[in-house]
Length: 229
Image 1 (cartoon, rainbow, N blue to C red):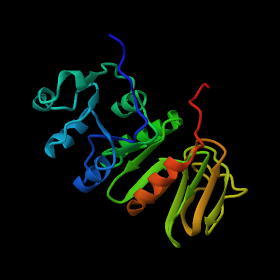
Image 2: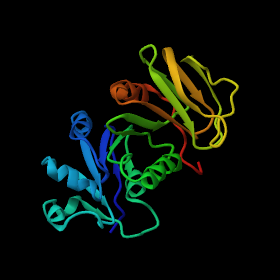
Image 3: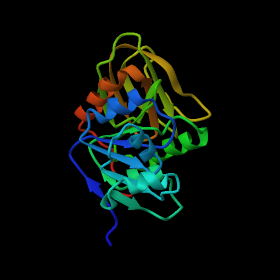
Image 4: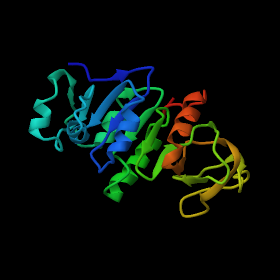
């Protein structure tokens, strides 16, 4: 049987198994055409009576009753144990943007692994949502219509350089790196224009900027190439 892949021109919601707030789940599912679950994320959907378009994972976190309630053709079992359920999903879904909820709360090692996966698949835009923040890998070029004085953090997961306007402390000429200088706790001085040289930096914004971030990511034509291309 061919390996499952899913391609769409619409935004996709992807639900993970970490603790989530129902409002965050619905804020994502209400604006997306398709909803997928990463293994145990199906439990969150079952609790609010949302049928996923698909569940991807090794199925070690999903209850049998939940599995039996989902049509068999929507269950995509991936048995290998070398990747996380999040990676299993993000490597099989191609969409203009994935909204991930249920991935950045709970265990810190899981969250860090999710961040690492974003860097491993830079060509697939993914915006992670929790009750306090949104996080995404900075694309090559990004424009965000943010209000004055909004917290804007750039966290380098590797060596990162770029240019900015609309930030109180521009990043032009800075060499950002983990263990060195980071761009956290910056703030906006107007609408933000950001250019990054490599797919190594995460942008972190307050949760209430979800709609603005979605608009900016969807409007940007600049995309990182897949690794190896």
